[in-house]
Length: 293
Image 1 (spheres, one colour):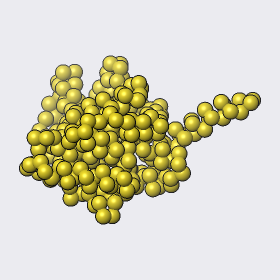
Image 2 (cartoon, rainbow, N blue to C red; image 1 turned 120 degrees about the vertical axis):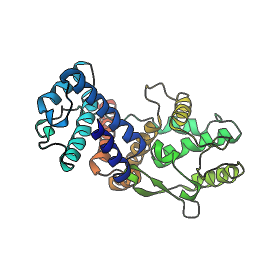
Image 3 (cartoon, rainbow, N blue to C red; image 1 turned 30 degrees about the horizontal axis):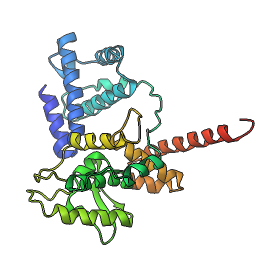
Image 4 (tube, rainbow, N blue to C red; image 1 turned 180 degrees about the horizontal axis):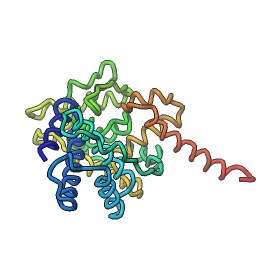
């Protein structure tokens, strides 16, 4: 549909959504369009009603899609049809009668500080450019809680060694400042000096030895490789390090609002999920220690 292409352009150029979000939105809408064409032979948006949408959602759940993923597709359709109404492509928004399935809360997966200290302090990393870069990447994920896309997008100009802070660009292109602890600042300073000795067409902080910037799958693989040395849990990703950062900050008494600002969450509710990990830890300690537990 031409309407889908125009909507994606709106998200890209006016809303400034990230490439990852654009891919997700476009994928959802293409899947929706294919369903309409194959099941109902729909040719215009005004032919769509709420029953068509419910039918698609039911088919997704019957195929085994989790409620969380179905809700993401509902969010996509709500945004699309809201834009379609404003653009006078449809007269009535069919999403007004659609309710989202309930989602069970999942606790963030994290790795204990002792295991991460063992990984970062051990001699796992090669004494060369790649090894020092990989070590720093893991230190930054765990030391700042930044997202994968934020780390890959870091430029040398974003690093303020003097004031021990980083400027990162998060979701919706919102920028924030993240503090650094001194040893991480020193590690960054040393790496930048070494990185400046490599010819590169850009000012991106993390590059390969050929000067090219890193890409998400590359960083994901290296994080999984090193986390596998200290953990056997299924999830071993950059986001697990982000969860580990937030959980340990909370366990050590950091203010929830401060953690929210460092993580770049839009709402406090997104940060409050980490309190559940703390409560579960307290419950486990109680059951283990109390004589009548």
